Amino acid sequence: MGSILVNGKAQEVEVPISLMDLIRANKVEQPEMVSIQVNGEFVNREDFNSTIINTNDEVDFLYFMGGGSRC
Amino acid sequence: MDFTEDQIHRYSRHILLQDVGVEGQEKISNGKVLIVGAGGLGAPVALYLAAAGVGTIGIIDGDVVDLSNLQRQVIHFTPDVNKAKVLSAKEKINQLNPDVKVITYYDLLTTANALEIIKDYDFIVDGTDNFPVKFLINDACIKAGKPFSHGGILRFDGQTMTILPGTACYRCVFHAPPPPNAVPTCSQAGVLGAIAGMLGTIQATEVLKYLTGVGDLLTNRLLTFNAKTMEFRTIKVKHNHRCQVCGDHPTITELVDYEQATCEIKSQH
Image 1 (tube, rainbow over the protein chains, first blue to last red):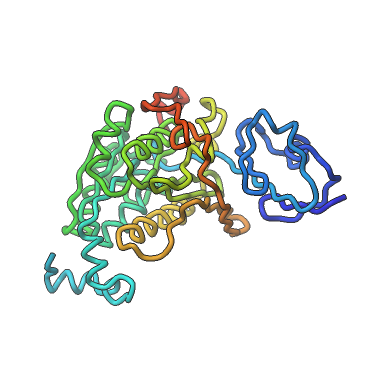
Image 2: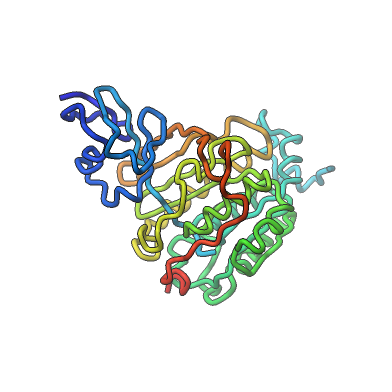
């Protein structure tokens, strides 16, 4: 087990873990709809499987948000 | 610009601020700001910018006021139902502050009119609810070298960032619009009315900071909050060198028309 930061909060996970498995573990409803940074760098969607997360890594899930007025 | 005695009185709480003063208030009064969307976000933005005395406020919105808007779009009142939102907003701004010149566009922002409309403004505020227009605002502002504020709200969540020429843009972070209907809009998923005010007032604050040059703008940072926990976060985001619009080798050189979710075209009834 290792400690990582997901959206600023500590999480204990079995490391190493692929980014895709971390997405599943965090119950991200639509992985194809989220923009992800690992240690401050954006990860291409096609690299979610091959990106490996280790202890002390920081992962940010950034979600699409609309709101406001139709225009 | 010489302020009248009434104006000195009206703006006295700004003028008292050491960082603003008469000089800062002059900058606000000379400012030209375009608000895209006179809805949940555009309403508080327009009211606060009008109160602040922003000299010219442009508002573009192609919709009319619906009863279901009044839960959060605080610039519109019950007698305004079925009135064009831009007209309703203009009336309130004029009552709040006759110093403000209001320019209305009863229209949708499109690839055909975006550059022509934004060219006259110092700062653009995104108060729209759909991704095609959010990307259109981003790309048009990048192309025209205009600063803008991105804002989004959904359910109990909000996010905003300020984009200046050269800083991380909306497309650096989100790349491309999600497929139509992939992400629910407020009209489909709901939104707590007051968070429109929380987010919109942050956007208005950024505009006033930009006009006066006070403080550090929310650039290269995405601010997010969740009203249930009332936790705020700022996530550092970097300018993406592979960004399709502002990267080293931009592939988007013309504004793009994305398909809209069809349910959105009939709006929130």
